[in-house]
Length: 134
Length: 205
Image (cartoon, rainbow over all chains, first blue to last red; front, side):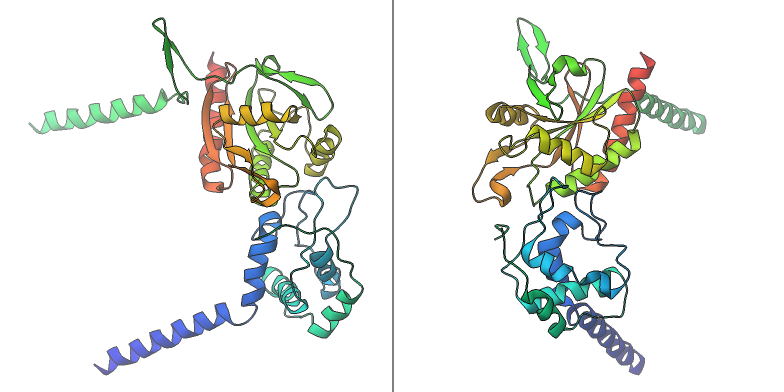
């Protein structure tokens, strides 16, 4: 009887731990990545050739510092057929969470881009054409 | 009695093995009977223009199998996933002179020959094997219909068009012999096998 109770408790504890892992840290970043980025850059960030560039291969935090402004304003590049448009509806915090999800979960790095720095990077970022996402 | 049972099992195995080795791909689409003749669905006559401005019609594929899809460059929803699978098919059969890939845009206004050429370059593919077609918008949308692809203009849809992400295999007679959901990599696994099956069938002829 004690054994059953103990194993039940252990199971509940484990389920709670797993649930917490999946939902607290970078949970919003993951959800936003999947909603706004994954269609083109793929859930696993592998992209499609040079059409939708992979996010893998950016191996230092420094390499991620162009991303906040790209998310907000897009890229106007004449050498690519697909023009990435921006997502100005995303707040500084949301963008910060997406970038940290990329850094942490896609690249298994334990470094983080801190919000004040993201805000700084977004300060000079122009708002251009946007996607009509619903 | 035991022997009879054994023979039964052996015959069943033999029959099923036989059926497997003779499998041919079906011909999809509605069949019509006209004057007693059965007419199978076929890709109707078309004339489109490729990324280099060359005119392309049915005769361009009379000696190749081809894999076909519909897309548009600024499509933000399912197109990238479908293109990833098309690229998988291209990578597998790259250099095979008997198979071509054909992507039709349904947004000819924005997807000019020049943009399609750049698109192919960004994909890193040889346009001799994988071409990108444009043309009259209504004709392109009608053609999508003949490939059983739902495509129509819809201001509510992301990017302004709604369409399905099917990938189709067409034989030298213009019959559709296999299809896959281009957004589903596992479905495309089976589709790759179908392509091989049909290529082998043509090799035997």
